[in-house]
Length: 512
Image (cartoon, rainbow, N blue to C red; front, side):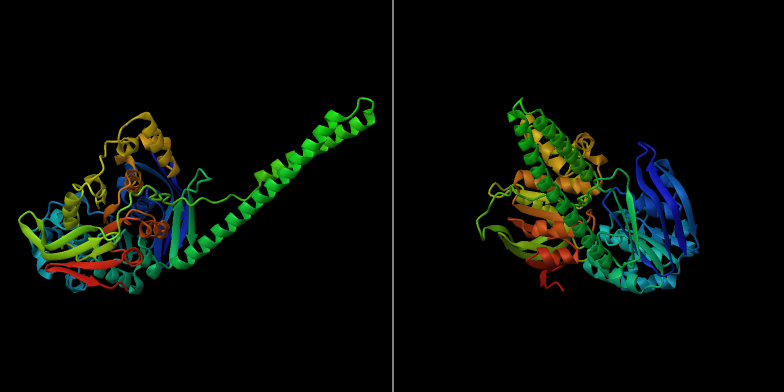
């Protein structure tokens, strides 16, 4: 069993609280999902449970942790830098912590995860592995050490579709207790038996943590029902108040008019009107006091709030991309060949494939080609935002084309509508969370009117509660999309066709 009692976390720099008075209990075998927007302290919470002392340099923690599990293992979002320069062989057989590995279990897992057993002893640098392969080696090592509590931070990021399905089955069926962070709605729906949501509600100044013993889908349905009810009550109260105020203003105007018209020879009538006006004013003050007790109309903290309203139209069936016996190269190495693909407007094409096959490399090649064309306006959203964003720029500078004051005002208005604070608008992009950087890229697409989008894992940095809105946004996009994704719901709802990239070309597949 694991217990957290009255945990509060705040940044040492600005003393801003990111978690306030959080308490929960996790029993053996539970699968607990931690959800919330980027920057809400989810990863820090996992590190605090692990006992990671590195957070002490930027976080002050108050609270009690009781961890009765015998072995806790943590899988971070990205592989620690200390492993990047070692070889795969050293990672599994030459590190200080290899004494804990059950090698029989390791080789059993290798087959299940689709990782070539011979590569365990290879001299390839870990840093040169693809993003998905880095996750796989971490999973292999972590699961081979016989943990009874597993902490996973976005474990499905970068994994190919087959491995995501394996991970989903593993979480569902393993007796291990697992606490995990994920943006993948399908994974959460299939696996989470308890939910911890951390959010900063728009009408509150302190973070709110909700602990629910419901499975993920039931929790979301309950949350949506509560949101709808609260919205209906709040809107009805305001509608009734508006009607009351209209009647009040009519009565007040009528009495005021009567007071102006009454004769000086009728002091008795004047006193009655004065008394009536006093009663009317009292009624108005009562209406205003009632307004203070109205139900808050909730705002969705994780709303995307982009509309793609400026997309420049393209003719139907306009050829966007025509690959004919093309190849994907990384240096001198050919990763895939015999690629044939025809894309016309307004098609939305999804690309999947095994880790390391060259999907991101292909998308970069396509971006290099399409960004030069003048008959389309191509936009790009890479996996690594630093490949496209200028991290030292501010959001206002990144989104401004001319730099004139009128344009800057428009840009700031757009940023404000997406709930960027004034400070965030004028601080370097590198200080923003991944989710905020992703929103910047979406806003760039909208402001520039881009009509052909190249997207590499576009859902990866958005809260699972943002995913339905994000899917609707791209589904209704007026232009064409070529996207790499392993998000099953995204592929199924957004893409007209899905292709698997293999070494010898594309294969069209049907999403389940």
